[in-house]
Image: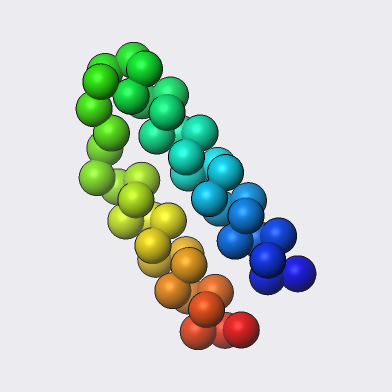
Amino acid sequence: MFESIFLATAFIGSSLAAGFDLKTTEIPDKIPHVMIAIALILYGVQ
């Protein structure tokens, strides 16, 4: 179950980063920070 959440987080975060990169050629710092925070929280729960 956690594997699918990790994959969904990676896919959604990467998709958001790609969309921002296409529009502004810059990725906001919040996206990777949120992805890392979710991964650490899920890893701690697992």
